[in-house]
Image (cartoon, rainbow, N blue to C red; front, top):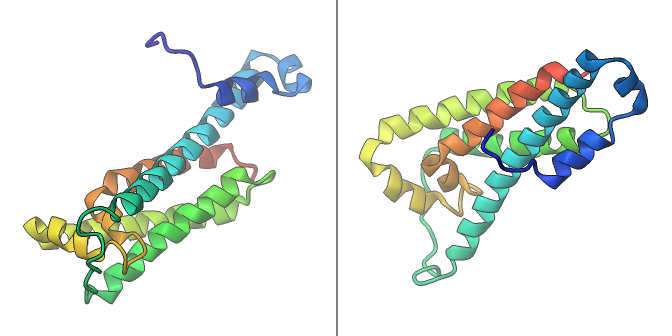
Length: 170
């Protein structure tokens, strides 16, 4: 609608839809395109999180980057951050799999949602201290500072995964 072409990867996946689906009629083709778009969107959101995290890790090596962060003494929140990363990694495995495991995807979505909710609640409790705390958290919590400052990125992955789930075989 914006006049921009579709990404080449997406166009290629649509062009490679099997002939039997094309021959099944417009409804079957529309459903397959919606499935392809949902999986593509999830891949894009995961790639965005990974690229942002890699960029933040690279920038940490600049001025003051040799000052190691202090540990944060909130093991429950640190566990939730690790659960965020593990859930995103699991979703990446599933979206790249030839036959994604529907039950695993549903469980990963549930874990990601619960962890994101816990991290957002922690952020709310910390209020104005979030930026200072996220700087201290960056390395010890395996990238936790990223989610403390950017919970919307994890939420975008969650929404994309939720949109993809109905297209998986039962």
